[in-house]
Length: 146
Image (cartoon, rainbow, N blue to C red; front, side, top):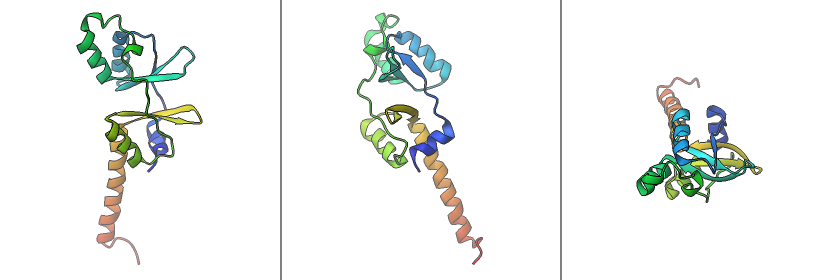
């Protein structure tokens, strides 16, 4: 299974936030959209980073007195790890595991195509295993002609 299969099923909508947005406001965006990360863009909509719920948590722990004035660019991850639509799901899962990340932006031809989460990867793998399991059970039960 490929990343493009996940994006075809889940869609390509990605929530972004401008780098000058206050972290406190970003928390509202997380909550309203029920997402675990936001891509951070500059004024020209170029991707400059990603902010995850854990980044917000660490900002609160490290600077709770100034959290209402702290901007996203101060706590975001600016060195992005990205994938492509043609990457295998197993490869994306390995990247996430190795780098201890939960979200991978998908880029193709220098354009954002979507965002894949660890939940998306696990869901797709479970679906694939369920289908395989059904076919094997049917084969063992001699449900196929021939």
